[in-house]
View: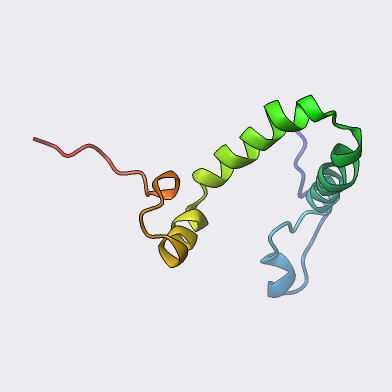
Length: 90
């Protein structure tokens, strides 16, 4: 089994507490961001934007925890950003 952290030793507490402490993770996230912000806007067709990408972004933002904070600050009754609640027990 290969471990991603093998040979990557941290010398400070701050470097150990990074969001992506492993170099390969930082490179992968950077490549993903470049792909998302530099390649997709120029390579996607109008169909992909209107039928696939925009609905995916909207649905992912609806279930983001920060959405509740934004909804309460701007419009408290925004139905798309209401917190998910469990059904009341009888």
